[in-house]
Amino acid sequence: MIRLREGSANAFFMVKYIEQWGTGTNRMIRWCLNEGLPEPEFEDKKRAFIVRIRKDIYTEEYLKERGLSKRQVKAVIYVKEKVKITNKDYQHLNNVSRQTAQRDLSGLVNKGIFKKFGKGRNAYYMIK
Image (spheres, one colour):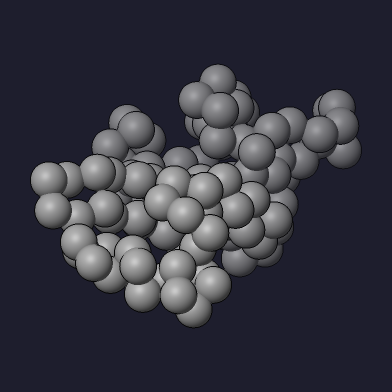
């Protein structure tokens, strides 16, 4: 987290890190999106401007806050490492039936976390 206090913005201006107050925010958003990161969060306090740049929005805490089950959280973490997951992968990962895997994976799609590709046995899921 970067905290800019009164006067420190001028230092960033002098080293050409920012052009003027407020113009760098769009560049920070572009940089984050280009690197596959979530958009930064900006907070303007009385004596500070706070920028939060998150490495990964899909933390275990965030996923639990979204109402995901332990199995679903486990699947998201799996996909972050392996890139994609199939129904069969989900079954093995969580020791569940095909129907339970399908229901849980559909729930992740409905919550906007996963996107489904393909159909039938060729279907797989990736982080949206």
